[in-house]
Length: 206
Image (cartoon, rainbow, N blue to C red; front, side, top):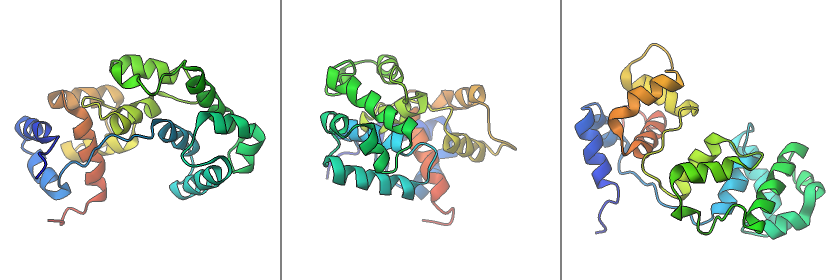
């Protein structure tokens, strides 16, 4: 059997707070694995901004049919704004996708070697692209690169998860999120993953 790549994180969380024991048992092993399609992940993040998961999947499928699968910067640039809008993207999102495509194609955002940079440098590269904010950059760090100590204080699921974990009356503020998650360093990404999954896993599950 392959060793659990997050075993150290699980040990740390269990030791930091006994409330992690039942939550981890209920959710099961952490399944975070790196995503190879870095560019496609960012494109889909832009597509999915402020629309339903189903609508985003429909637009993404149309775009892949038109421009090829997987998403490639040169293909999306060739399609242009009109083609992107024909797939269902708004004018603003179409320009965001083109901004990203141009930044990656030019090498201004070196996605193939971006994993060699520190977390803050990666966030700076990504958020310099109009259309990619801190939340998208943080999700990229967690899900594409599996950086282990990211805390996305602007994520509603994280705030709700922290509220339920600590039995709070209301969702914590961003500053309170940082304080509450401090004992979970340096594995706050894994803690976030468990908080997200806990919201989708019934409490009576084994």
